[in-house]
Length: 387
Image 1 (cartoon, rainbow, N blue to C red):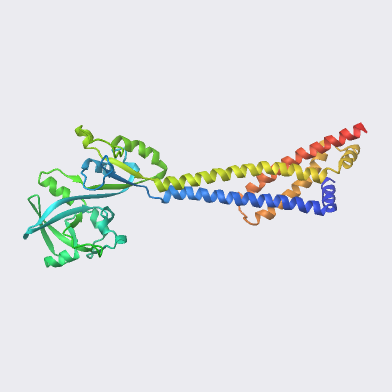
Image 2 (cartoon, helix red, strand yellow):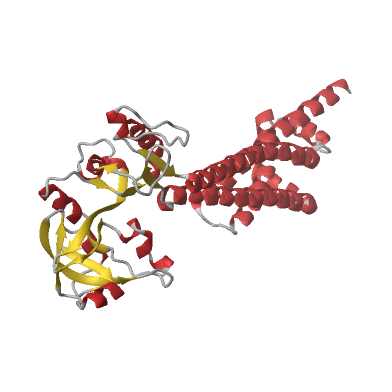
């Protein structure tokens, strides 16, 4: 009987019912749009953590990265898991150089540069106009090997009368060593012929150790392995590296003079992350405000829908219906209309998350409905009692 009575009441007020459906549908559409925007900000946050590369550059205490001597001990952070930074860093770029002399032509000399990645030297970057040609069986990964292989400037190679695959004998610190020519590089068009010879990353150090000489890195940079652990990485890095201070005096303590500074290039990551987090926070506030607004809208629409039914409510009481039954009948009308509006809105995004959010909004709407009906029922009884 309750369902029949409720359905009959709704049929007798089609315009009012349609308005409630439209109001709830509009609220749900707004909610789903805000939720979609919030999800987009969450995706931006995940992308910032997963896709933005945070490079870190080792320098001296004043921030200089050129013509500096970096203690080789820092490399252990990348190769030895006993060091605390080992699990926080990835994709290191090393560069070290020693002076060579071509054994068969001692008047020719230059720098033998060991790198583990072409990005360790700006002159080799494709975006700067450089190009590297590799012999069969070799690639960029060959720079990470321990092989005695070299790459020469194409013009320099031609001037020596050598070809890819030939053997080039070099003298480094008095140590004679044969290197196989594994390719050549073409520098940017604006650059002059270079006598620099590139080799695998550890070759200069092996030669220096064999000659009994000390060795250091010319440059060192790396990436943060997990951006989500950036703060912890900064704490650990502070124990091994100095902070960049362009006004700092040259350290007099020997141990301090052997330490390098670290610049963490996290500006883009920080700006992107903070913007996405701020936008996400504001959207979450708007979603919460929308739920509270739906309570107020539920109260208002229900009040308008039932305010002229005080006599009907009194009659229902007179027929013996209990307060809970009348409240249920009134709320059932609003619930049916709210669910209808929410379902229509969810057709725009028919997934479980959307249905859940629409369901919460309907419950908020019905909470306002209950408050409104209770208020009208109380006024109806008071008016009849006074009459």
